[in-house]
Length: 135
Image (cartoon, rainbow, N blue to C red; front, side, top):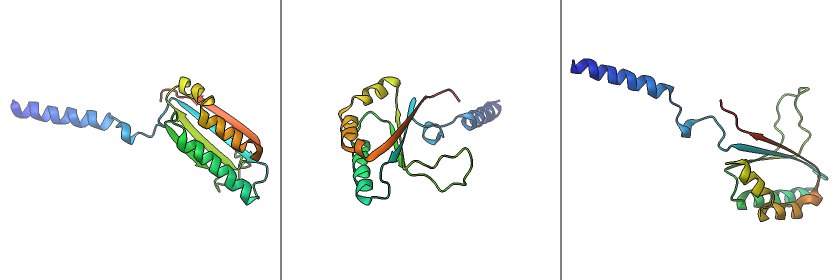
């Protein structure tokens, strides 16, 4: 009888542990709100402008305390397709724990300083914000 209970417990544990996704191994992006910003620079071939932009955006990313996760990237060398837009120069992604923190970020000194220091370097900025849905 004890052997059967022990076996049942092992089987039950195995089944439940296989169906449980550990948070540290989750594929889900951390943060309730994903804030994606694309930048098109005025002079992307001008190395001084590029360095000034990178310095300003990296300062923002390193000093802002509201974002949960951050990413900075350039267009990838993926296959050209009608649905792919590689015309931008930089992509910045912040995730926030809630809409409240994203709203606070808009007036955060680190964000306002970045805009003041770098706005003359870009010709276009496009923002996409999305709220997390259950998967």
